[in-house]
Amino acid sequence: MIVAITGSSGFVGQHLCEYLRGLGHVVIGIDRTGAIPCDITDPVSVAETLSASSPEVVFHLAAMTHVGKSWSDPQLTWRVNTEGTLNVLLGAEQAGVR
Image 1 (cartoon, rainbow, N blue to C red):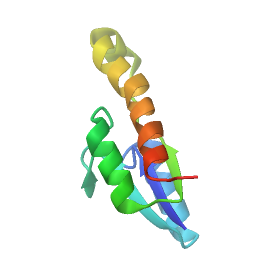
Image 2: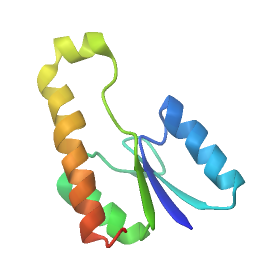
Image 3: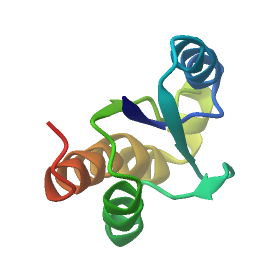
Image 4: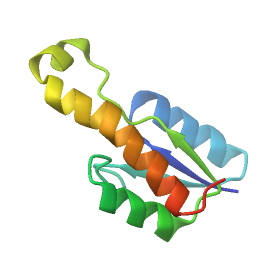
């Protein structure tokens, strides 16, 4: 199975990538700094990345999780956590992800 994981270089993402690869799945890591650089706040980039990789499943783990940073930059936190999630959902729909 082809699996896409947003936030693949984060703590949980790294472990999920390793686990799924160990089960024999093809893992597409989607991250700002990953092999396929993609910023989830950019809806076009998300849609293109998901369409190009044709995943069957998407695990969405990308998020701003540091509480202190959420207070110092609430707009970025909103963009990543809320708009980014919407972009991933819409991109997955466009790519035909079940």
